Image (cartoon, rainbow, N blue to C red; front, side):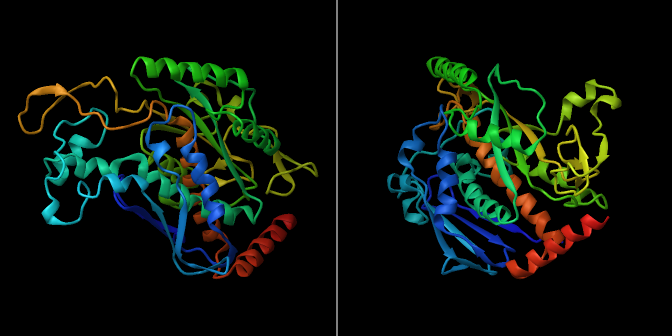
Length: 397
């Protein structure tokens, strides 16, 4: 049974975003600063839109923490939408404010607008776009930051970097060691597009500038990794317990993500098996969380048979260009059924760097869930005992 559950609520221009994370044991240190650091990272990245100049996301922890420690009860977090003051009537909960702003009846291609309106029987697309907006990911980042903080107590580090924006790509030698990945993370944090290479970063910025001039948008590719993950998370027993499947679903749930691969992923299909399997060795030189056993490659991305194998977890995702365009595409009005230019809603030109931070959060939530499945307990001390006993067992295998 999965042990970590989350729920998010709130609209893009509503009063606030709210999130609940359940299943966190007692005794873990947590402060708003642990959450706010990642919220700030999510709001950064070259190519973001005007909303980021309005919001300065701060986490308000409403429940589940006392004197800096988790209680074991559900943790509730709220993030105020500062732009809400401009939407008091337009997003009002009261019937007498109905019609305060015009309805949106022109669905935007690539959004949830049309299928959502048809599914939920509304002729005002704002009923759909307010919740389908990527603004919701701010709360996912907040809850994921909690998971990241907890996992860090057990030596797990989660990070990301951008590999591609539009057709500008960053290519590197095949990386598999924890030190390699941590170096990439540190370099990416210094880049406005979260790319580890300075020259490629500059080219990506120019590409975004050109897209802005052309009133267009850009997608891209990013990699999320986790180091220090012990062998044995996830399971081969059932399809919904497989760790790689859970990670793929979590990343695919992020707005605009259209492709996910673990390890070599799609590129492995072009090579014979002899080139993409990670040979197994045994000796004292291992630096993984699988004592004695080690690999010289990590084509599998740290997961074999749905189970973590002690190597770094590596997951790559592709983000489509944001479909809200300043030069709108053609659509059909819901009321008149006539062709029009689709409605424009304030948006970004490129949000790939931010999406990578959201993906870190989703990966952290999945890994924390799998971690507590394996080493569960009601307190940090109990979880740590279970974890240390397991590591001792591995040394005797």
